[in-house]
Image 1 (cartoon, rainbow, N blue to C red):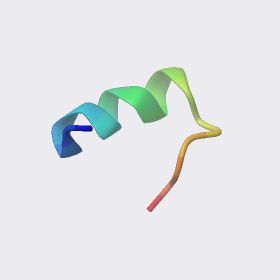
Image 2: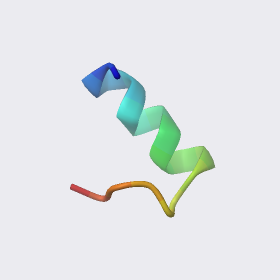
Image 3: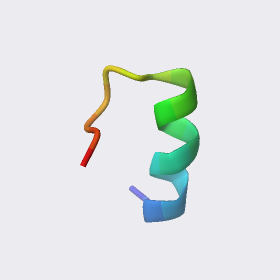
Image 4: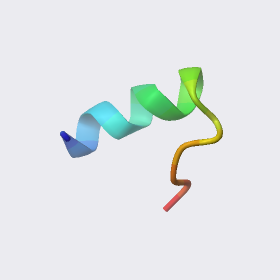
Length: 19
């Protein structure tokens, strides 16, 4: 998993890790 990718994931998947 890419860190910068997590940012985009949060937008689509708010349930993902918020950390």
